[in-house]
Length: 237
Ligand code: ADP
Ligand code: MG
Image: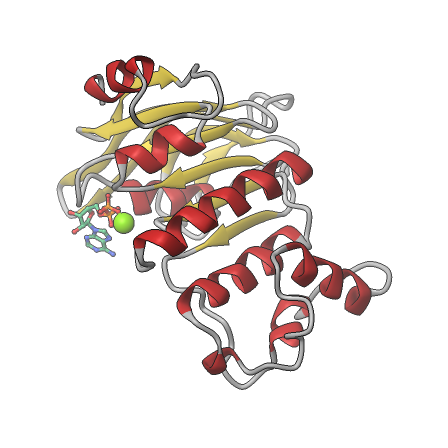
């Protein structure tokens, strides 16, 4: 993707995401105020920040859904960009498999859609209606719909925020596995510091319209909540 949506223009063709001086204002308030952000290929970055700090605004800009941003930037290789929201946003009048393959290009979309559903643990549910699925299952379908397109960049806006704690942990395991296999760059917005630490290679914090903290997560697996290294990292966030 050479040029980006809105006022962004390309200047670093090799980067996966390399955004510079991103500005988005609503009225006279700059919600994003000269923000810089880099994402390496295959890197999993969690984005923290208070409610209203502009996390969703940033994701919309990166997704190319906002035509009123300015700045320079590049979404390098990641075509297509996939977006997962807190609600799965399935089309209720289409069955699960049809949701996954809707608009999917390339050879044998149905077989690829079935494989994607199997990957998220929903083999055999192809003909189910979305309303018959739990929230966690709907979010699995949403992940399958994204990953079957082999995105270079996966943007996720509090994807597990509406799920119960146990389902959330199951989704963490699933997402790690899917990302290890498909290797998209990921920017995952979350309120949950533990979710950020468990999932991400790097945690960034959005404050005052910019990336205020940028902290690598270098913990031995498994990332046990009780470990001293975990506690030290958590203190910093
Ligand atoms: P977050 O996702 O971090 O909670 P948002 O990106 O949704 O925050 O919003 C950041 C700020 O921008 C908030 O103050 C919000 O009210 C404002 N904002 C977001 N979208 C709009 C819009 N379409 N019109 C006016 N203000 C908006
Ligand atoms: Mg938000």
